[in-house]
Length: 257
Image (cartoon, rainbow, N blue to C red; front, side, top):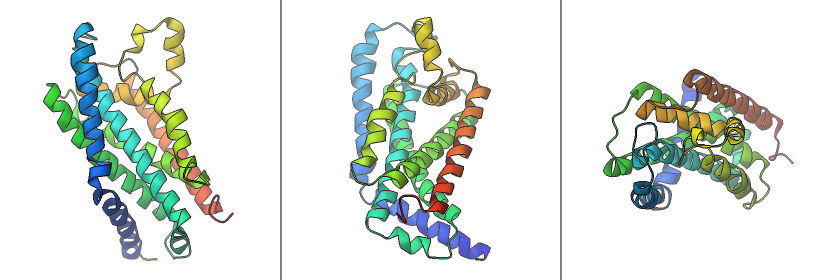
């Protein structure tokens, strides 16, 4: 395939994925905004008013980065896992696999669709957050970098989940029993410095902790982890998961069997 043909193939997959979730924006984009507003009302106004400042910021402002990134994580993951598994279930993925389109472009197309949803939802949630808090962005470059890398990482993770899924129930197991606990224990609602020493050390094995703290540093300028190490960990996870997802796609795992 020529470069233009590859680009058109990638663009076609991306546009299809974008239209897939934007047509039903009431189900895909609006709910995270409502959920985030409820978090701010309950945790920010009601509970947050009873909690002292954390690292010099009110509790309301402190939880903003985590809530934004949680929406990005959830939606980028959900978009790819449901889309690719649906393509498997409907057998439409076979049309792509027998086409001249390289597998890495197929993977990149689905992942980009998840990133698009994660970014759009993240922007919407950020606008909601601005209504409840007044945040001065500490580093726009770092904030956007972590924002984008997180969406990419969990889009790839969703793709891997879809590859192994054998039923629609399987695409909810990882988000329910792995992703949600790791997200809530990733420092969204608290600083790990508030935890006993044992739980602080245990928290450090949670990769989502590094993403949330890096994003929090980008917005507020405070973090419980080293930013350089956090970015390194995120990038290593992206490279590893992308390579693994491409290996599974080339092998035909969950598709040819």
